[in-house]
Length: 283
Image 1 (tube, rainbow, N blue to C red):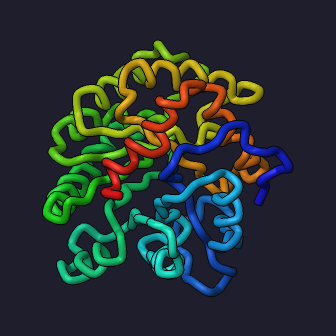
Image 2 (cartoon, rainbow, N blue to C red; image 1 turned 30 degrees about the vertical axis):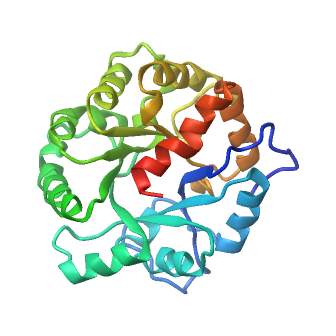
C-alpha cells in the first residue's frame, strides 16, 4: 500500500491514536462475506505497523472491514499479536450470545459497527428497517460500556437523525457523515451532523476524505474540518482508513499531513489524536 516517500510534516503527540484502519489476510485465509464492495487486498498487520511507526502512532483501533462480513477472525487474530495498546470494532449479529460478547470485551473490543454501503442510492424508509438493529445493539453495547460505530451513506445519516438523537450511549460516525464536501460546510445536512455531535455523545471521524471530496488535494474538505473544529472540538477523532481499499492510490503519509494543514494548532491536534480517542475507546 502507498505510504509514499513523504515524511510526516508534524510530530504526533504522545499517545496518538489511529481510530480507524483495517487489516486483511492473504486470499483464502479467511472467508469473505456475501457483499464484496471492493477486491480485498492483502494488508497484513506488519505493513500497517511500519506505517504507524513512521507517523508516530502508538494507540490503535482496528475496524472490521465489510469484506469479511461478520467473521471478525482476521481482525481478532491481528489484535492478539499486538504489543501496543489497541481496541477493536466488530460487526456482529444483534443476538450474539452474552458469553461471546464477554470474550470479545476481554480481547479489547469496545464497539459494534453498523455498516451500510456508503454509495448505496437513496431508498426512502430504509432507515426504518435498520432502526431495530440499531436499538438492539445499543442496548447490548450499553451493558458492556461499548459504543456504536456507523458507516452510512450521506442520505441515510440524515434519515436516521431521529434514531441517532435518541441513543443513550456514545457513538461515532465515519467519514464526516459521508456528507459531500462540494456542498460546502454550510450545507444543511452537514450542519445537522454537527448539531448531532454538539448535542449528543457523538464523535465524528476525520477519515476517508477521498470518499467525500471532488477537489484537487481534497481542498474542499478543509472548510468542513474547520466547521467541525469550531462546533465540536471534543468530539473529533482521526483515522487513516488504511489500506484505503477502492482509493489505494492515496498516500497514508500525505493524508496524515493534511491533518497538520487543517489543524495547525498542536493543542487541538492533541485532542483529535490522543485525548478524544482515549475517552471514546477507554485507553
